[in-house]
Image 1 (cartoon, rainbow, N blue to C red):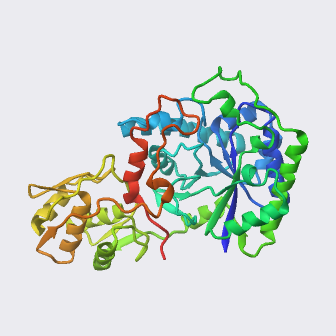
Image 2 (tube, rainbow, N blue to C red):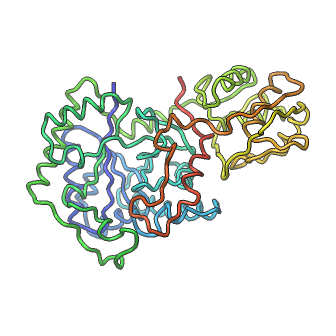
Image 3 (cartoon, rainbow, N blue to C red):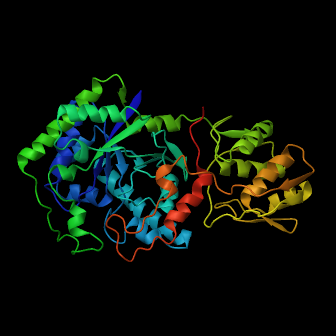
Length: 439
């Protein structure tokens, strides 16, 4: 059975008229007994209060609320200001802006915010870590999910891809068209059907008109996008309702919500690695250098940190926040023999507070973190010396097809000066944080 979530990128802070679409779509879902997810931009939350849109706020009370960032397309965007070498500086600005977004959204809606949904292609690894630290475990509209929508833990948040866009699929569709869409969606484990409420009323995106590549106007002096004919808007609303009813009547689908996912994540048991688990983990990584889902859901970073603690005498490791790398990890190019004593000594010298080291000194020999991990597992299984041979430094990204060859440059409304010097590569370097729900 395919789980279905309805998600609404609720973002247009330039038009009080566009807020009418938020109200209508929220009410259509309520009338059909569906709990949707409304991903709200912080500046829009502020504007709803300024516009006195108590009707919209009341309609939103029936639905889940997520953050859609503080300022959406206002430059510099999330990607633009985090594409720098200094992670801490980028992180501090993310935390400043996104904390403000949460304050604005809570202040207007009074709702508990259960996740984040980045605008456009603003999938910066910095914000992923930031949202996790802000207590938002869900990250919707991602490049870090499986092709069939199973969901992936990455950078300490649970990623779920957007699947099908309502304005592209059902704006002017027949029932037969919708049935064909459902046939395609039934192949997924989970689908998120999404839309942008403002597009129900406008033929162009508000930010394409006002923020394409630059701030084209003074804040508050916006250009209104071209309006759709009223009958076209109403037909779209009717089609949204028709699609919901088709899904409700189709036994292949189960309509769920972000809040149900939130509950599932909250119920995940504490993840603990014990010394007794090490032989099984060692065997699994020997077969495939990838995250494992037994005895519990584990990332490579979880296993690395557990090995470090156990080499220093711990009998178990409680898994928590994990990090990947800021640069490409090193790996040996030829066989190297290491003693168990040198590996144990190196464990005490590893700084594991945040990002993992890209290279490790073991008895005067430089090895990579993957080399060290394999050697540490061998030592924990009783080896007095270990011969490390060249191997994979990062897990395969075949399971995350959108991430594998991702490049942010030249995409969405970003400025021409945006270089993507760090973001695409560093997002891939976080693959050691990837894990899946336990079997």
